[in-house]
Image (tube, rainbow, N blue to C red; front, top):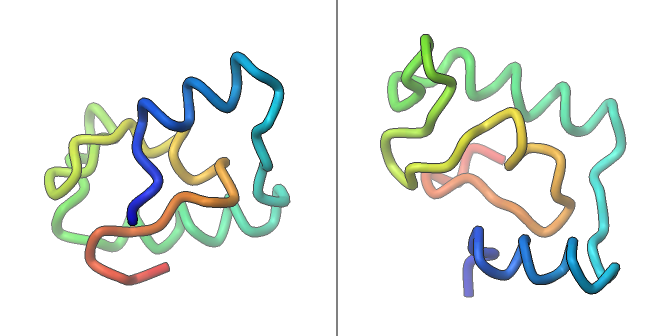
Length: 68
């Protein structure tokens, strides 16, 4: 099951969130920047609709195209 935005919000509010390391978040964002599904201006994934600067920071998040 994918880690959804709703689950991420719930985890943040309840203090149960696990964050990716800064290095991992940067590596994920670097992959996203090269992806044709990233809307560059708004930094949103056109496949899942997520705001990528936030999504890459959650350890449980994953790319819908399985790039990370």
